[in-house]
Length: 102
Image (cartoon, rainbow, N blue to C red; front, side, top):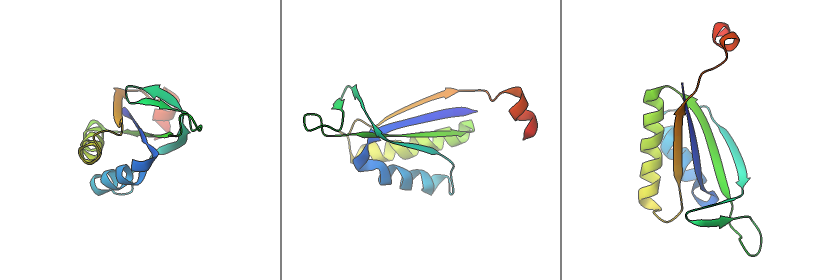
């Protein structure tokens, strides 16, 4: 199972969702809004000094689905090259008791 984290400016949230939905209809995700932090593209604190905020999508899926998510986010990045959109993916394992219930 692959965990995918997509960090992006709130302004592209809908674009990311739409691109993933095109590739994985009805995909499951968690969305964390108002994410604060500092990355290569600057500080995001939602204050008058640092007014912007990010969002964080968290998705779990197969390797094939992870590739589709990366492809979708890459498409959004082409349209918004300066928004600091980042994707991180890594393999995770569900606890044994959860795997048996599936």
